[in-house]
Image 1 (tube, rainbow, N blue to C red):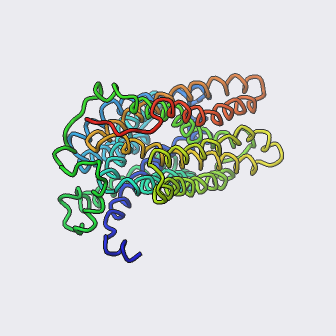
Image 2: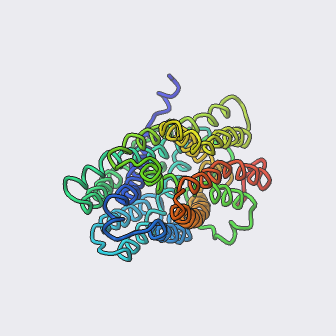
Image 3: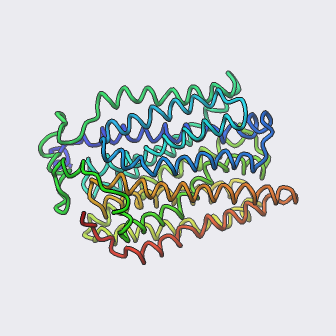
Length: 434
């Protein structure tokens, strides 16, 4: 502890900013799923496929945003890039309140998707700039737990806001929170080289990885996507994100509806189960980041620590296949097994995000993260289409639970498949030379 005190802890203040931005990011995107059954579906006469189409618009625009947002952030810098992204997505979130039709929601979701694409490339780039490798997975797990906090806060507040002031105010108030974050971001954030609050000891500690350059000019240099796509490491990250991110999207957008359709829960009934699920994922996110860092501190090679941790979490997802069967005894069994799977996803996510900074120099981290994020968003499009059509089909047959059973099988097998493919493409996660 004495050594850590001498090193300094200012990097954790920077991480707190990223944590709160990520919380706002998921709070804003969660609102629509909580208003779907009781407000938006009756008002706009949505079917499951209609809702899926609204989700797909978000995913398409999120994917398109990922095409360029990482490169833009690498070029203009973390501070300005993050601020621009959050400003636009906050305005888009508020804009949902003005939607008077399904098409209006699609427009609002589209702008939200493009702008929210900036969060994770900027966040991962911030972690790469402010933390050494041995702390990056933990730092990523901590800021990524903001997704869970946002998902917990949303069901506890959004229905209440909608009841008291109307569904439009749920979008307005949650969107406005992001604009407040900007005040702290501009006041506090700078890069390590320019920070006046960072001690020399902490600066040296942050830049203690011998295989990474310390030159700020190198960090700002732009690397083209075409160049990055020539590396197997890029494709390992692309496929890993493409197979597993969609599962999180499914939980995020369909969990409230699952509890409503499967167990007849109202918005007030499922607030607690959803809060339990995302509370579990908070612990998973932090533990997932800690585990690989702990293994590295014990002398394990970075690639071995990351892959071992990811295998453990891939196996922890498998029980979600039994969610439907367990739910027949009590819905709480289904909630807990979904919570375990979602928790394992966040633990997996903390590690797979970190592999981008493990395998690539800082100047390319946001771009590579954007490539992986695009893959996850495209996968999210497919999962939304599959879920919408599958659930509508079995709903018409009067057995919607069968549709969810199939979806949970897909969820359970995705991570192990991704882990195997990543191991084939980049078994030792060798650092790319650019």
